[in-house]
Image (cartoon, rainbow, N blue to C red; front, side, top):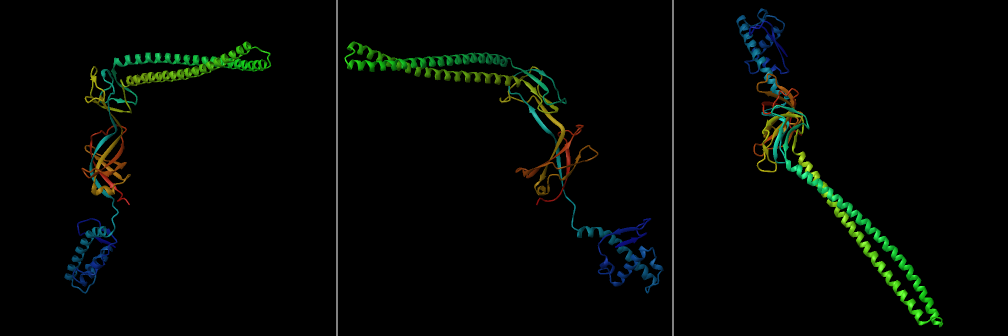
Length: 396
């Protein structure tokens, strides 16, 4: 329905309102004083749309009654126009997203305290607070002369172990040669034993035919026994040579392990020396410097250790807030968020990046984070913000 009422509130142009709300009960006069008033109100709305003065039209009512009824109808029409939006809003289903307003804090996307794993004196400090660094840039150097001595000792020990390994290789070759010699001797003794046994058989046949003397038979038998003994000795030498070879191989394995230990000691010492160079793990800015040249710094494993620098990544800022338990079910990833920074004229539009999916048992709130690009580094960690989350609705 359209209602046009001019001149009732001092407007130069007619005021028009549109709504699906039905004014039939009002126009019929239900609850407004009877049928006569409803009829007059309906006529007033009709005439007002057509810019017709109802006072100039013929009516069974008197002029005073018409004026009174028309004024009352106009008043009721104004009241209806003011109430229609509220009534329509109450009757129609809400489509507005659930809003959650919570305070928030800005943090660096990445932040780390740079410590040292070795103790020593700072010989060089190359950065200060506010300096921008790239990943791998050298920030400070720690002087530890003992590590250089340890490295030299490890290198010398490794060389000695390498020589021992070479000696073990030589022993193995010697044992292999002895084993081969013993094998050849055994073959010769076996051949000699075979010959002596054949000779003994012939002598025994001759002796049985009275063609050989006792002396000759005894000599052949003696040579056969000597050949057997020599064969047994050769076999024992082979077993000894094989045992020597295994021992040499075991000794070489020990020497090789010692070489590996020495090499590992060198690598360990070099790694510790590498810890004397404090480098940036990622691109960022130095937010804290807690040391100066000449300071004695302790290894981070000790109780008296403290960080040398604090490095922050600022190209992306992480805004976090704590959503109350009553609103947790409405918050989802990619929900729209408006971030109002104190001192900033224009709010920042963003989206929810991640949620904790669990509540803090102490505060009964869920951590929610929003990532914001920060190319000019105008957003700084520690800033306070007011965050409005336009939640899309409860989770299914």
